[in-house]
Image 1 (spheres, rainbow, N blue to C red):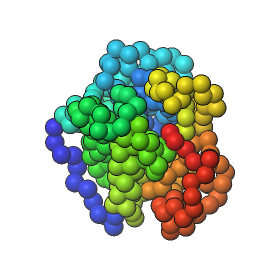
Image 2 (cartoon, rainbow, N blue to C red):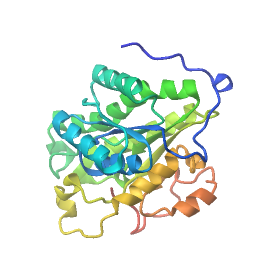
Image 3 (cartoon, rainbow, N blue to C red):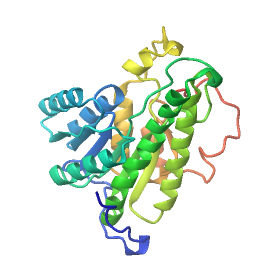
Length: 287
């Protein structure tokens, strides 16, 4: 595959914006879409009128999910099976989305795995530990590399990276996941800075603790009942896609904790959410 279009500098970029516009007719690409939060996002964005492409490793399960989303919403959907850490597979999948649905207006990097066991890092299997980091960081990097140049060329697009409270406060028993989410957050910040001056933005979204197969399998959440409703995650991502939260580009937003009305009405201070000046409280997220 080619390297994609040349990226114009901000002063050369073409016009066009999602700000204030309906989502109908725009295109979303959601990774990790076959189950869990990714599935909720695929269906929620399709319900709001977006054409949705889903990416995941399990092609059979992904195809069934996207068919179900299309049947439930009437939206155009596309299943593009790929391992997000495989550069060639990612580039081929993104090209297929462009050809069959159109250029991507919203990229949601949701795919990623977690530590195989709750254990200190010196007991972890090195290959499994590193695969966790790669699934989040390399995956989001490859997707951004394949999608963002086309957003820049059109001067239109939003990137959402699914972050975690573990990226700001590590859990020692989930060291790989904590490292991965910290790296992902710094990458989002770097991407947002590089896009300054363009109508292309990047955001970190912590989904809270959503009831998914992954969270149910984690011993730390056994017996937990105060789940974050997945619709809160969908609402936040949809608001980002519509350009309603552009002032928060490069920042860390928390579904289920941050009030959308407040976010829409607030302009962040320079240090907001980038430097902690107060101790962590009980309401700080861990997922």
